[in-house]
Every structure is written in C-alpha cells, then in structure tokens.
Image (cartoon, rainbow, N blue to C red; front, side, top):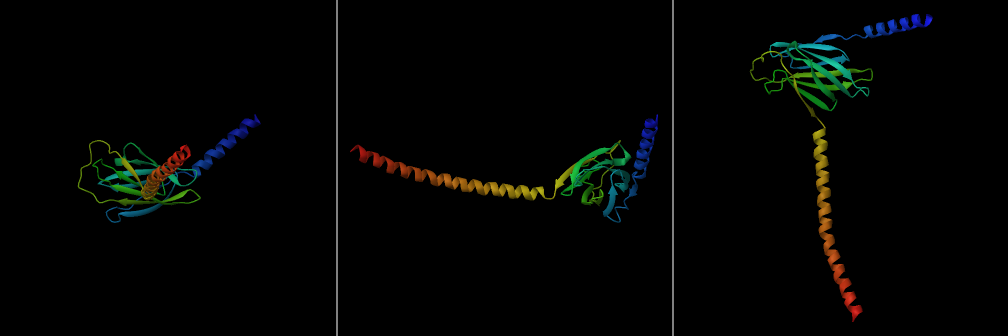
Length: 193
C-alpha cells in the first residue's frame, strides 16, 4: 500500500515538473517592417507569424541529444503540420508556404546552447505576387548546407588530382616495363648464344 502511495506521489511530481517546463508561445514581428528576425526558443515552443497575408505557426518539436540539430513542424495557414527534417547549424531551411515554387521563408540556427536553447533566425524572402491556394497550404522544404558544397567541391578536386597522378604513373610505368622487357630479352638471347 505504501509502495502504491509512493509511486503515485512520484508520478504527480514528474507531471508537475513537466508542466513547469511547458512550451511558450512567441510572435515574430511584421516581416514587412523587419524581414530578418532572431528569436531564442526551447523544445516545444511555438512561434506565430504572418506572411503572405495569412497566419502561420512553427513549433520546435525536438532538439537532438547532442545539441546540434533540431526538428520542427510548420503549420501553414494554421493548417495541418508539415514536418521539417532534422537540420542543424550547418544548414539553412527554405520554406515555400503556398506552393508557388518560390521560397517564402528561410530558417537558420545560429547556435544551440548547452541548456538546449536555440537561436533561430527567420528571413522573409522577396515575393512574387501570388494567391493563397485553395484549402490548406503545404510546406515544401529544401535543406541546403552551407558547408557541404564546399567540402564536396574540395573532395572532388582532391579525387581529381589523385586520378591525374595515378594516370601519369600508370602511363610512365608501361614505358619502364617495356624497357625492362627489352633488357631481359637481350639477356636471354645472350644466354642462349
């Protein structure tokens, strides 16, 4: 009986602790007045913003255990959640809220602190005049790496140089081996005579 009471008290304490760390709701300012905005968020926090003449939400769904990536949901036109895959400090996520093939919003993580608070920058991108689609909007995301292209180019350059050097050596080696064969054939002929 005492064990059940103790277990019930521990469960209540656990639930109370999770309520204390409940998510907060924040708002981005008007993007037409301030297109670049920075905000500090924690896991579970929600940000409401207006863009393209409509209201949208984004929610920090998860911060990775190693504090270098986040997962978030975007609710375009206050509709159904669209999940953005994990992205981190070396990525920028481009979001097309109204599916017009023009990126509407760029999201970039500046830092994730040890206490699991992240600094997120949202940038409203210049827009072509569009209409809000029928029904709910949908997020089409494109995660582009800031560094991966540089490393890819450097890697390809190194592989190319190695290939050139290997080709040169293989080109030089047959000449040496043919000279060696001539010398060996000459030695064999001399031995036969």
